[in-house]
Image (cartoon, rainbow, N blue to C red; front, side, top):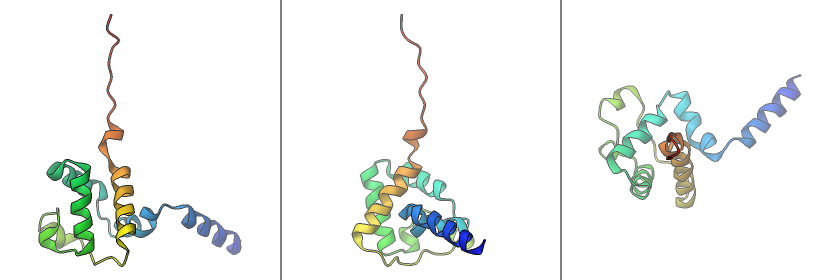
Length: 115
């Protein structure tokens, strides 16, 4: 039974996306609202390219003054530590993050056929 459970957990971990393994696991553990963070980026920067650029800069060298979150946020949640990932990996993780939380996928337009 223990062997089965170990194999099962390993398979789940291997099948998890890199975003889940490297980022969202900690966000979930620390109860950091990822969707809220993305919405703040979207409201402030609006374009995907600008959001990617700002996220990349913050993740390369996290400083509270460069964060999209207000100062009271850091009273509840820990300050991000510098990530040990390559630029290529960070960019890939940011793309996955934006893809996961992109609001465009949630928009459903209803229309009636014009006669």
